[in-house]
Length: 262
Ligand code: BEZ
Image 1 (cartoon, rainbow, N blue to C red):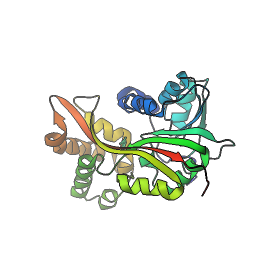
Image 2: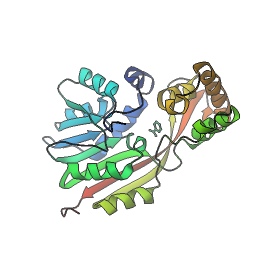
Image 3: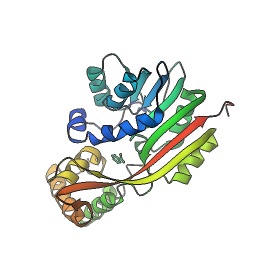
Image 4: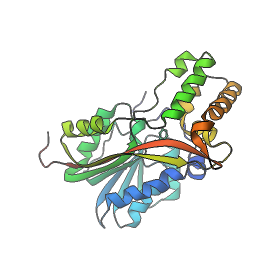
C-alpha cells in the first residue's frame, strides 16, 4: 500500500457532526502544547483541521498532515488559510523542522510506531517538543472484546483476529521515545470514559465510524446484525443514565528532542 494514503475511507462530515468530542477533548491538549505566537507547529493526524485552527488562532504557524484524502479535503475547505497536506505519519517529508509536533487521537492508528516516532523526531528542531495523546493500553477494551466475541459467534474468525489499533502502555511508549533520543518530561495513562453523541445508537455509530476495518469483508446486512448484537452485549458495561460511553484510556506524553541528534 502507498504509505501516504490511508486504506480507511473516512466520512469527514460525520466525524465532525457525530464524533466532535474527539476534537473538543483535544482542546485541552492544545493548552498543554501552549503554542506561542510565531512558533512553527506540525499537527500529525490533523483530521478535519479543527485543532490545527485552534493552534493557529493562538498565533502559531501550523502545518497539518493526515493520511486520509477525505479529511484533508475537508480541512482545506474549512480552514483555507492553514497549510494542510496529505501525508502519513510514517512518511513525513517536509523541507523544514518545527518548534513542536502535536498529535491528538491519531497515533494508535499507526501500527508501525517506530517509523512514526522516527519521522516525528526528524521533524522537530533540536530542543523542540512533542506533545501527544493517543489510546493507551486497555483503550476501548470492552468494545474490542465484544466485537471479537460476536464476530467469532458468527464464524468470522479472520475478522476477529484483526488488530486495527496500537494501544501501548506508558512504559512501552516512553521507552520507544527515549530510545529515539527524546527526553520524556511528562507521561500520563488515565481513564476517560467518553459520552457518545447518540443515546440510542452510540456504540453502533462509533463502530461504523472507527471500526470499519473489522467489517469490510462482511455483507452489510450481516454487519447490521452484528453491530446490533455488539451494542446489546455492551449495555451492562457501557450504558448508564441514558447514555452510551466508550471506555477510553488515554496516553498523554510530553517529550523534548535532545539537542544532540542520535
Ligand atoms: C481513540 O481515540 O482512542 C480511538 C478512536 C478510534 C478508534 C480507536 C481508538
